[in-house]
Image (cartoon, rainbow, N blue to C red):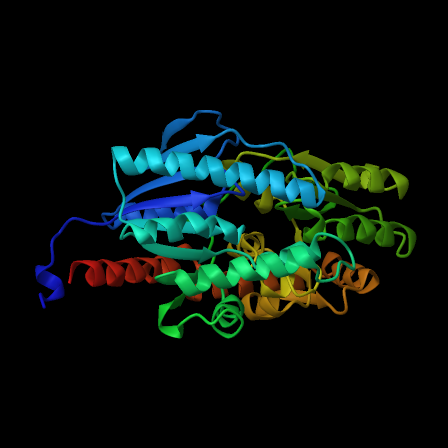
Amino acid sequence: MQSEKTLPTRKLRVLMLLENESIPEDTRVVLEAESLIEAGYQVSVICPTGRSRKWVETVGRITVYRYPAIFEVRGFCGYVMEYSYSLLALFLWSILIYLRRGFDVVHVHTPPDMTSIIAIFYKILGKRFVYDHHDLSPELYLAQVPNRKPNSVYHLLRFFERLACRHADRLIATNETQRSMQIGRCGADPDRCYVVRNGPNESFLGDVIANAEIDAPEKIVLGYVGAIGSQDGVDYVIHVVKQLRMVHNRDDFLAVIIGDGPALPTLKTLAKQLDVENLIHFTGKIPFAEVPSCIAAFDICLTPDPSNAYNDSCTTIKTMEYMALAKPIVCFRTTENQRTVADAALYADNNDVAEFASQTIRLMDDESLRNQLGAIGRQRIDGGLTWHHQSPQLIALYDRLLYQIRA
């Protein structure tokens, strides 16, 4: 067998499949693709349209192929329509790329796990399959509707999750909770499972000037940045604002909610119903380049994702971006919040809105504590939680896969 040093120098051609977001909006996928390109790999991504409507475009050094995003339809029929259409669009683009440029590896970003069917097809043709497990699809499905119980859709999602885990040549998880699921629940070989955590990129690590349009010198700014789906718990922010006003008689603050998603209209209606809309500023979705300056304008950052089977498995990138900018955090006591944030936050137990509000007031009234928690968070980021610390794990995974293919 040839030694690793004498193997052919051509790097792998990687085709990434992304169904639930576009490029460059999905920052994790962009970071992974850029890291691989920097290491000499060739990377293409197929995804739906987002802010950009161009079907083919170069984003940085990433070649992006897009298909028109389908409108959202709720319920079982909506799932069938969305995923059937997306799978067909991804597959057709992949065939065109296979015939024109070729690729060596299909790197599938999930959810949905059923996208892995495409990668399994290409395994028959001798390609390798990397499974990138962003979220647990079965738990996400349950979290999207309050009190939803496991049903036929849930068990179907479990089937596709097992199928992906057992056929992938390499598996990526964002944390140890997900990796343990891949091994224990899905039967994946531990030697094929790697943890590549989320991590804030360089734009959050330097000196960032606060956005003057959000900064409110006479008030304490409470901030949230991220997706606004039913599973993200942003409705808790509205109820916390209500608690601050009605229970604690506080109006010396402004709550800023940055982001977009299917639950946003419901949140605006809720704020109006609870008579707190004058204390909340909804910005909608903003360009990613503006996010660091907005977070820099926050005095206290909120991670309202409630503790449940889904959120306990998630390492939220928004929370790590808060930490990178040395901001104090109030959050619920999820498993991964405790592992990632540790002592950089104040926690509310049992998804209790009243306790979340009380912890927020503690920080509102104690600037020293805010500075202390912010400093702890930044130290944790610098100690190993940046993307700079995570990308070597991704490159090592691919280098070993390259050696296996070429040896």
